[in-house]
Length: 73
Length: 279
Image (cartoon, rainbow over the protein chains, first blue to last red):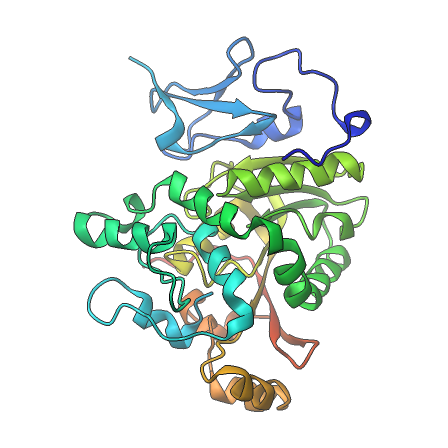
């Protein structure tokens, strides 16, 4: 969406995918296994080792959908 | 939006609902598309063949697979784009009373950790009390981005995050919230009881679940005018268990059922969270 005024926009994210509130990260789990997630800050992904899936974070919004996740080999 | 009375006709198979719906609720049909990853629902909007919603439904009928696999994310997003320009104006106005009532109820409850299921464009977000820490989920990325714009532009520091998520398969730890509120959502997800089960799971025992829904406009404007002017008991008599029968194993487990202005079109239901009974 483009109706955000530049001065209201957050500063450019230093991490891919944008910053996620640590309190939010604490309560997020894998939607498939309900197992814990590992925050891969460099890639901007939430990794579920139990499901072998990496959930992307885009614009600070975690996308917790298995269809959208990257399959780990 | 699907309601109890319509719900059966919305299931896949013969008789897939094409019943004309009240005209002003077209955007709510779009809302259904956005919240629902399944192809079973009908947008219930006459003359919408060829829309992403219709295509998605056909897609499902052909595939015969698990309904949840049917509506691809792109169709959801396309559906939203079709309505994006009018969503906040039309849906926002229609739903304002129910939404305001629900948020006021959330604000009055104990506990600060709040989950809004089906947060949409974040219409409700500015109304939460400052001490409430709110997480919003939705299936529509476009809506979430608009919600995020709202959070930034209105400096809503108590919004802890927005997450794209399936309300029936949430990615939260058990007991992560004190309160979960689903506005105009319970009747548009493929399986309301799965929604309820997930809400029960992610809210701590002893917390609260809130739902706002509205009634089907089965007979168009005249029916709507007649019914909405009726006292609550008559409205409930018309749809004795409205969505509750689809949502709750025992509708008597609701602690409060409150009609919201205008005309009792929307109903707020509060359910104390307790361990889900075994199937």
